[in-house]
Length: 325
Image (cartoon, rainbow, N blue to C red; front, side, top):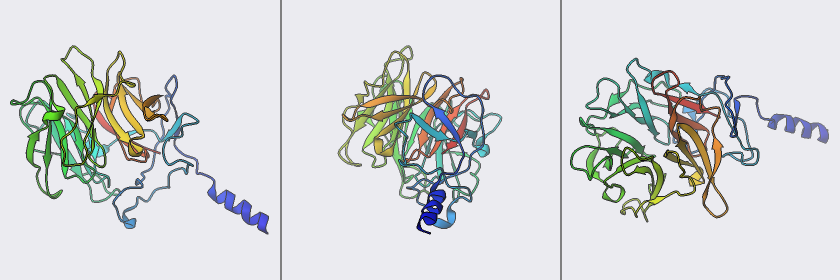
């Protein structure tokens, strides 16, 4: 009887089949299948709001499987509610409860060349609302490179509006409640230069900013990090992430697993890096099952790396895609 109970327990713990193994080496798989939703471990939602879908495959490590070099995701799918004939969307950034999504768009209805838009939903079981522009942030210039805080009350972005130091400068705006418009818009001097400063993410504790920089449009972007002692202090001088910067273009850095992992774009492919024993980032490789051979960029992920949103032009225009594991 004891043996039978142990066998039954082992069978109950076997992971369910599903998703698609993503090789981080050479080549890209060409087949896709669907995927179900999942709420991240840090999602601020009630139990009643959990999606009515299968649980993700259990793993010994809730993060990336380092030894096998694989990360298991289901095939990416466009976020249907955001698809529009005139859509050209990127730079997604979400709150930790996955109910508020800010992004950059060139779609009709904005104020300029590129603008900040957002969409909401009541819970992860609901559809996204029709997106609307964040009119308090947009100008007839360019607004791009969006980084939303986990609570949705602070938003960083880059803009080449008049009054900056030149090129894209970094700006930040705050509000007291999500229902409020953003106010107190200021330029972040410590993160802005005469070149292009393209912010892409802010850490959960708001002490680390991730951005890409280039001196002018003839240069390639490189990755930088800037830190500060607390969420109210000024940022220190940004430092290049030298281990990830090469001869190509690196941009769109976004942390996961408490900063132990870093998603970024290299030459139009989504890449994954992890910290080694010394704390330096080391490239694991491209996320091949998410890369299509066209342009993939601007990945945002939950801290447990189980849900990701990114931009791709695989259909001919940039749309926001989501992928789960």
